[in-house]
Image (tube, rainbow, N blue to C red):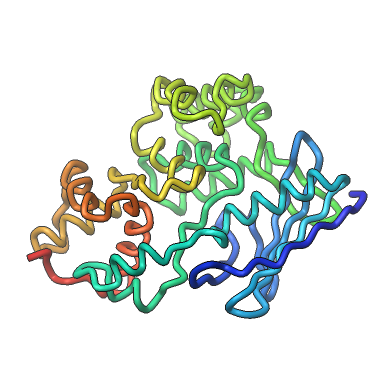
Length: 294
């Protein structure tokens, strides 16, 4: 790639810590830095970030033109959430009976968002109704088959909507997807590639996605939280939340709540439900949940 480099030093408005790579290998951690290959209208963009001190993060982007480099830098900043001021959340919920302990001890927690909403949509479809490890291997195969590669960096990028739309369902299924999921993914890709679904045009175009068989509320809420940065949305139908809330309601580690009960639980967090969900998972993983809600 011909190189035009753009840099930005960002001082996060609230506690921040640069996270590691992603399981699909698209974001890679090298030492204290993360890097990612993106494309803007077919132009490769290399982006990276390093945190030399708790109060500042250096972002770097390189591409063939300055506009593309600046676009890539902005997309990585969005993905990391470095510009988000989470102090209102911390002030409001640091003493919460369920998640307050981890809010105080891990104030830098953020959802690890994706640079582009299409990634979240595609991966959410691959993750429906299967365990995470199986979904991860499907994603790795799709990247290997249809993704873009930059020899200069050794990095790969997400398959474009056009590439997925042009693939036969059997080719997608060969990556391990169930046939029905392959058809759903291809239909979604066609809507995005054809310009009928635009992620920057409000809710109306997104309703076209909801009309596709196989795309339900969970998928759309994953897209909202991890692809559009909507902290007020939580994928309440997620199995992890069904298990955690069921345990909190009953004290029984094997209990499961239903989706309506999970939504009722998260209602207390208002416009911060998505972030509260991240803290709930962390509290469960660290064994720091109360025995029950009562």
